[in-house]
Length: 594
Picture (cartoon, one colour):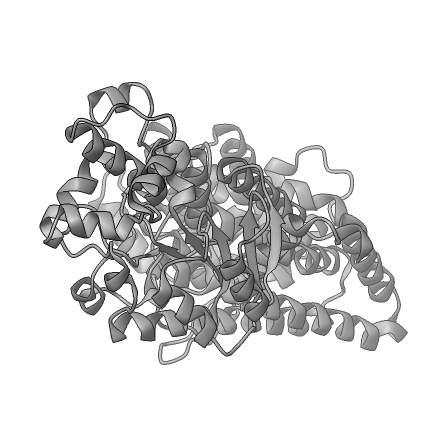
């Protein structure tokens, strides 16, 4: 596209967003330069200066020129280090003072992570970057990662590589090719950098084959073993983006040509990575489906549900929408491996809501205006979403658990449509229908996807939603917020949507309560003074006094009692309905004061 021709950074941002976790970052000494950690050339000239001054030479305006004039050779970092220190331990000691910040450095903000390091750490935390390769000895990158709550898998030696978890299982895999400045095994000299251990070569071959690359701060001129790894890489399945202040050198250009790298002109690493992070955040926010396309689908559902002759089109509409949703929730960026982070949890929840919204809104529509003939189709959709979530068995528990969140959203939207239409028979049928679970006993929908019964609520994980840390019913509150945004498609004029939402949840609690029998509840009344009679999931009505009072008054009215019992609620028993109301009252007292 012509308007992207001169904007490779935007192209890179799109590639990262659409291939989450696929791009690795390769950083060199240029990235640490703005932290006042000198490059290899600057260390070389400073070593020349210090040696010359110790020999009585006067301060020179250009130490490189002085060295050339005196020795007839170019200043060489490797040669100098080998001359000054014969052992790896001695070379490490020389480098230590150039890298380790002292008190003055810390007070003046030197030798600490830069905005570039922080931006990369933020992209790691959000899951966009998972692999970092560096030729630097310093610890700026791992310090930045820890500041952002990410504990990296650090590989700085062959020994560390052998004991490290595979990079495919790590939230962040940091490969320090030349070692760590506190480890005597750092690679400094030309002879040390001429070839890597075979274990490093194998790892680099796989990384370069399976990942795209963002290169920043590495000249590509030296590091012969790393250059060799570039030239060995056979595939170009993902792009390489190479940032540079000026034009690439001869050696770097050879590598760029071999990998068909896209060159990005930058003013500095800090500005580049900060802007890249902002673009990625903007693109993620814009991934929410176009509201116009959602309205088109919703209007199609309304048109098809209105006429019997469109039943085939209605079924095809929902089948296609369900298949599209399944494809999106099985995306590679939602893999269940990796570590927990609050930001990743929030990001996944937002993504699930975004991709489920079209289908959920349509389900609300046919819940409101359907006539019961759509019921089997809706149940098949909910079962399909739940079954698809259950097919993945390995990974971090929280990521496995929330895979069925789209099923929760679909169930809730359809249930609210039924509530709005007062289709109580279909409502009871939905809540008490069976969900089949692989290798486990089948359970009712309400016992699988409703509030505390849903495994996605384990460990109070929903308190990690921003601003929800002190909520008594965080999932219930969040679903209310989501459905408040979606209700325009199927609720219409409703003076008190909160009460309608609480009515839906209260009826779900009643169906959950139906797992008990009257005799056991009566026994609980006789032995428990004020205690809960039987366990059941309870939403906002447990503490929201206004809704609680209004709904109890409804359920005690003759009209509502007749309607609910006729639809199958409370086992068709007035006495059982009274026991439920009593149990709900005890929950209200407990949750209100908790």
